[in-house]
Length: 383
Image (tube, rainbow, N blue to C red):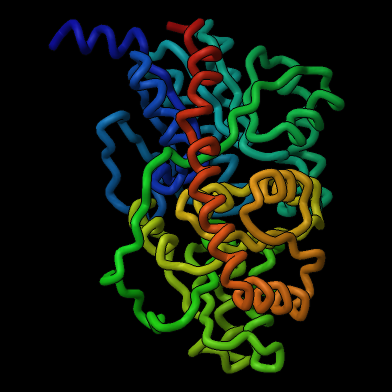
């Protein structure tokens, strides 16, 4: 036991995140992979008022309680608390996830002479919360310009974002796409969803679909009777900054019987809901750089579940959908165009079955296991 404790301290890899860890599938999968390699993962996140108990076998989870829950004061307090927490614990390696935790990780790595890996899950300064607000854009842009060139090992989620950073900073990034672990999902016919009629088709949008600009508003409007989508309900799963407005939109349009909201949930339960759906929607709008080049996790969840995809016309998403022939690209985010695509998909049962078959075949390639070779190559140098 003492030898295991000593080994754990020697190989302790500390992940820093600005969320409550529970729903961060990428960080949790990364921790599992590193645990299997012989590291001892510690994930440091944020304690939220609604945080659920989470104690995985592959990592120790620490959630820092904060006075402030959003805005500049949230990030300021998080960075200060992270700095002093990291300064006081034993570690071998730090993995900073996204720009909002990079500063304390970088400073502690320098002070304590520890290696640091930077895993940027998105084009942070191109997110709507940053890009569309001049003060935030100035702050985070300057911070990135200072810190990014100093990093030796940087990971990101797709080739488009890697290329953007290479053009800006002249650095080559490692690409690890955020795909689910492979498994065969069988829809549970006895699995029921409150408010959902099992005899109807289900159009699903999950994950970050309740944030501004994710296309959920237009998808809801597409469910209006004048657009002619019959025998179908929309299921929206997750949370986000636009949830309240979306729920009010449903009420104002009288669509309560056609649109069902469910909160965020454990991944295994989420995938049970996904496996019961008919179409999976990913409809991000390209109104900021990060969304333009996004490759949403939910795309790969849909594919794993054998769920034909209705996707917006974004380069990374379109490349996957067309290469593996797993769904339809919607050329516009207008409600009438979304409704037209849904009707077309549902009316062609033979094509729907082909897409389902292609999804299940593509899932054998588009999975986390096939990303692990790259991960092992990056992290083996730190063992």
